[in-house]
Image 1 (cartoon, each protein chain N blue to C red):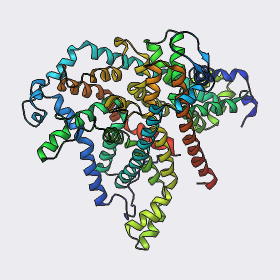
Image 2 (spheres, chains in turn brown, orange):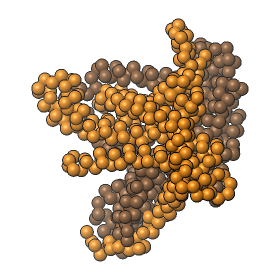
Image 3 (cartoon, helix red, strand yellow):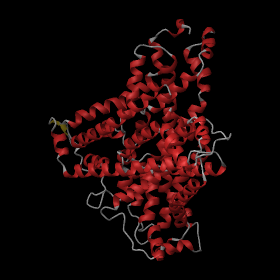
Image 4 (cartoon, rainbow over the protein chains, first blue to last red):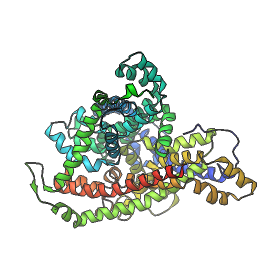
Length: 283
Length: 293
């Protein structure tokens, strides 16, 4: 996306007042459920038992958050999510950079054919492969392992597609000069080309991390042992006794706690996310 | 270009080899293995037995599958236009860079980075009868309460509201990107003609971003046909299967009843639907190059 410019725009339609008020109204609807969740999370479970409208009145407490600190289970799931999302991100970055460089700047037999086949991979939804994948992972004993949780995320074709585009955009003369110095392809890739793609790495990395952190279906199927749950599946499992023993406030606090990492990544890397979302799909 | 050093070499293929192996092992092989499985009667134990198209015929005749298909189609028909319209509205309202609009953009996209578990948790806190935000508010207002999640006809609606809340950020961002590329002289010309805002919208803005509207619609169709987590976590498909989507049918048949062959057949039906939508997207987006745009 082009950086939005603040130069004079004929103001016939863009951002006129009524539309902006409409958006402001929608933002209230957008935020209300979140405010409600945060409200519940800072109320004692006893107060909530009497009635959830007690949210609108003091006293408030951070006891629910302190309870998370004492709940090793939630922390274990948090750790699993961190391992899976980080591992998946690193592997995707490595695989996609190598493949993107190969497809964009090198010649080898069947290059075009292979690239087209990989692009077809973009159109395959997870549902079409998940049954067979589950069976395969069963053969190799990969269920309930970190590797088993990470692997499916590495096969996506999006990263290769993105990196190929970025490597193609790098001017030709950069590596030609290096070749005259008899540098090896590997050296050119590692020392010269890869540093040029850091913004792309950031974008792809953030997306892969968020995907790995938020994925629900595969961990639901693959992680059957409670200690191997990721945070998404673990929280889903504690939703089943909704509003029961653990209490609404505690559940709400867990939800707030679990969404914080994704929101932090979002706030810090907002620029990269916007670039990828708006640039990647439309152009 | 110095052809001498770019000449084709097998060793250059080593760069793509690692990904290619993962791609073949985790995408291509399972894709064909899934098709193979769909032609067999397979359960959790022991090898399958070849049954031809039986699984496909049985799935197509399964009332539960047909209900799931109908639910999914209804869901897509309602949620996708809502997402497109709302996304377009937000993009039009926020298409300008001030501190306020950047804040709103960030806000409307922020829900997209949450996991489905969190999103459904938030909305269950809204919808639960008695204790939910809606209950509390309607009690204050003196309205009659509806138990959205466990009422037939309302449960899918609740799933839809949650989905729109979760997903509206992406269409908004895509429309914003498209609006940035509308040539400014069109607006200047319209301003000289004293065109009304409505006329500018219908004669300049919308025609200029027509292809993006089409693309966003198709992307959302592909996305929303894969509905699963919201329905499973909020309503568990109920009541009476009235909110069970296709993916949940596949999940239940494959991973709860372990009728692997039949689940594979059902997933091929879904694949076909999504493939048609993906092909439509390819056609629409490749038309761009013909226009030279």
